[in-house]
Image (cartoon, rainbow, N blue to C red; front, side, top):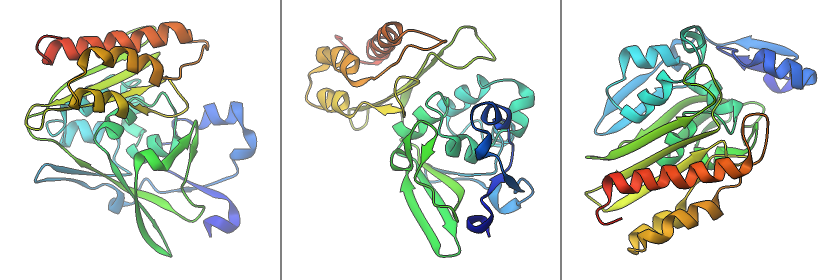
Length: 255
């Protein structure tokens, strides 16, 4: 039915007015799904967190804030309480904004998305699902139903959102760095500095090889910022380097 009518599933709809200003043709018909209890899953077991696509940010804060502290920190900084009361994880992911504050965390933890349709179920990494700014690989008859995260043991992290003010703002740069002392590895992800979130795989490999001083330069090459109304490309690139250095200085000896 969705494929025939071009109807769009909607739960929170917090970005509808923005879409209406930029692309009226995209807004045709909607199917409300915010009442579906099947999309409200919140489960944690054996260091695995599953979040239903219909879970709002407020519901996460109320029921699961202790499970993944970087995600909790990011959600607290998202918009206003009224927006968090209605905005859902699924909507935030499918919207595929490069400035989405939760996406760097999902990239760093290799989140797996569950997509369902009448044809069956498929699972796909978030890095393959988001294909560009406001673009995804979701099929016309599919619905994003859940997000699964494997939470590393004994992790340490730095999360930062840099915006024009402390609240109610889109980020100039968002950053998350994980340090996993048990396996001696790092994971680095950056938002608002490319058409999609950038996971710094090359820099992570440099860390594994012990070439830690080369990481900040590697990050400057990896990010692809633009100049827009919120910031310049040059400043965004500087922030990415500086945030990386803050992270490395905090957890890595002799950096």
